[in-house]
Length: 430
Image (cartoon, rainbow, N blue to C red; front, side, top):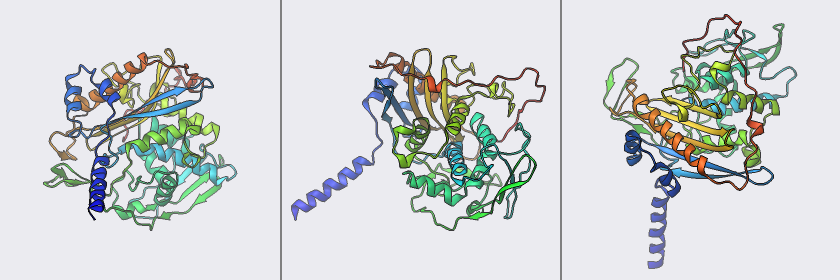
């Protein structure tokens, strides 16, 4: 009997130990080199800032095959952070996968789309002035979602996929904790379960493929609550003195984002079930727009003084607003409710460096949600830039047995057409 009690106690202790945030000594070693007062403050109290970091070392063998090793700082998959625009990453991959699996003649990422509406709050979409054709397409949605993180493209990919299929496909790939329940349209739970009817048309406007509206009748497990802060502003801007409830919001652990990005950049490095069903031209397209700058892109034509090169490159976001010439970051960022997140694959083509880095931080000192008083610039972005710089400096000194061949990631990017007199885009919802 005593033996069983001891075993039970040990199991309980092990469970508590496993529940602790994970931190590796290497991360302490790297981060301890910071001379930033802001960074020291955050790193001394990571729990208060809900800071989580995953640094992934990549080593190649003599055949250039990569292997990956993650190092963690304060990582806790049970600690909620709002993914915000990060959810656009898996939606882009799933949308291309669905197009491939439909195997319908004439249907691809460039095919014109029309969105109808048949439920409360839904909005039709017939034209897209930011695209080269003037019409919506999955390709242009992905560009807009990646280049400066526009919101409506996410909504449209969500509508194309449907709430049920999004979660089913991601769970089937092994991401069992993921929960994507919401569009960025202020919808209630029931509205988010409905998605629009969609038509795909050829260049002559003739119907190629039609998708009827969808409804997700399957339940979500909302048994675990995620409550944050001490108050929030409601839709009427009235202060509610109780924590904000994120329980039914989108939820994806940070390491899942890292694995999702890795599975597209390095598909052979993950189990087959975890990969996305993409054609080579799909992967090439994704690599290009995960790393291309708004200043290089003709369609959409963003104002590059507002949407500067490091606009969605948080690990390189400094006062210059520029990116080092030898570096490209293949990444996705998100920001909302005081959370800032970046998941990146970084290459330095001059020094033959490659690594992955993922981090999220929460900056909301007054603990009031929805008041738009978040310390993004004064704490969040400064911290992420410092972490990015410290890891990059470490990678510059790290010895590798074999130098990586990064040729597949050396992409021919667009150049702005100097004779194009179209007005640039200065305002977006993102």
